[in-house]
Length: 130
Image (tube, rainbow, N blue to C red; front, side, top):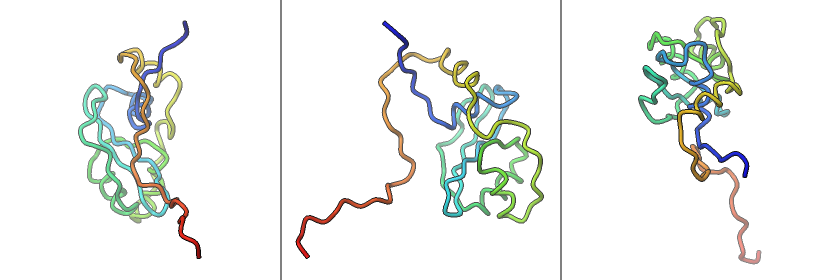
């Protein structure tokens, strides 16, 4: 009947895509507006905390202080905002197909549900006449 969906977040998929997915890491995704989404993963790629939204400067200092390898589209921006040298990225900035497939192989299928990290900027139009 076809493939069944397997839910995962972008952060989980990216953590599964890094060179050593079983080792602890920090995932940093550019949230625009000078902010970064951060999530720490421990041994075995297990999320150690919920995803957090922090300033790019704060993210850079947290990446530096953690001592963990950091991956994702927000790493270079965070380091620059904190005035730190931009280290060479040693892994992907977006999830890889292999990472997503390896993660999907460990999970049951389930209905997909959106998981929003920030409220939408768009506002519903007013129904009141002007």
